[in-house]
Image 1 (cartoon, rainbow, N blue to C red):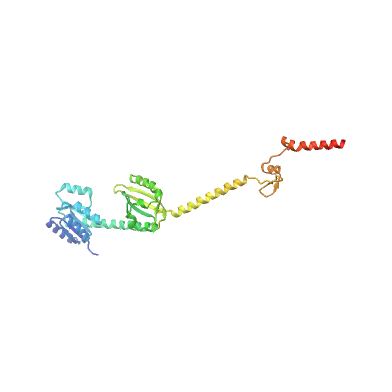
Image 2: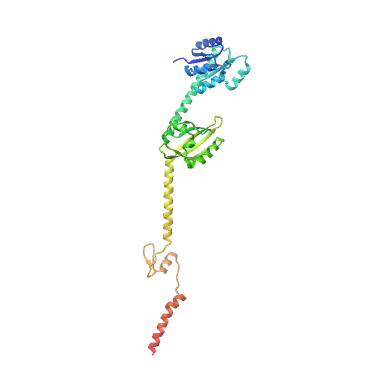
Length: 329
């Protein structure tokens, strides 16, 4: 296995040569020697060392901390800071901010070996975890994203491309709100403001534009990382579920309408225009009295109303009286 390569950064050339000798004695290789912060940044990008041994106090345009930040922005890499043993303030600061990644100069070869090996082992463990996280991010069926507080996606997993048809580059090049359905934008902005101020999005639904012009329903869960000014989100495509729910609701409405129609029909009694009999549910014709008795259990008594008496009975009595009179004559 190839030896790990270390970049030495120190503006004291004599101290740098001593460090090189100790590094080689520990079985590591020296990737290069930088004497300033800017040179360290350039060497780290060009030589791609496995570790940087960085003096905190450097002459030139940037100190060791600034150089380390520049290097780490371009590529995650373990960095061990060095400070003079009599520089109490710097050493105290290093203990506070990086308790397991600093040494006091002059450092012995044995101590240097221990610190370098520890840093490399820790970095290897972090890389393994990072690789697992990357793998999870890549294979996830759900749509994972990191949204910046400025409204742009900072990271998306491949599930976005499969769901919407846009490339990841296309999705990251425009504000996220441009992909939201116009009718959903106001409440989406309201939810986004709530999350940015410390809230959470739980089972929030909205529609996102696809490259073919259609829209898909997404179900969101999201939480903020205020320190880094980003929102971590998980979205699930629920378009098919929405379609099934819409079909179910339409069917329910149809059934309710049919039931109301049946109820209306049940309230209408078919009656003969001539004899006034009623047709029951079994298609039998009955008298009004018979139907009502069957349906309600009512018993009927018969009489003659004044109108019918005047229209029907009185003419009949008059006719009978006339017949009787004529027979007497």
